[in-house]
Length: 187
Image (cartoon, rainbow, N blue to C red; front, side, top):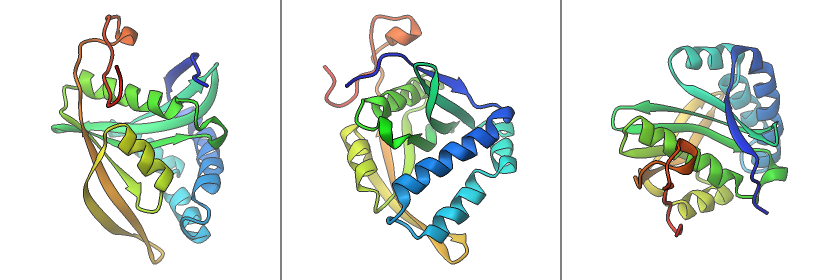
């Protein structure tokens, strides 16, 4: 089932508690059993602390809500940096998986990459997150490196680094043009 009423809205400083609450629901649903519970707690406390997100917003990291029929159902954060765009986070409520919304989020990120004139999009994904790895590979992302980085508390972020070249085919319908972003497998 494809969802049509989809939009993106900036996360504001007033939204930080709502963001933290959504992140907690999604992370406990998606990461439990993949990484230790104590690591989930540590990472949520660090990555979604209001002062951390506020600092990122002040530095130019974009945080956005995914809205479906006017309701917040996911979020993402990204920033252009040099020749590429770094996709820091892309999360969707599990009850909305399988509806094409993750693809819509990736298309939105690609539009931002085109707008910023960068050549590639890069992201990190936990090596054990098979579902996310399949989705990113389907969208044309390829592994370019691996990284295991200590994050405190005796924990590691053990990730694959994935990258995808930015495809340019002219303005998308969303941007007022006739064309669209062409992703692998699109016609």
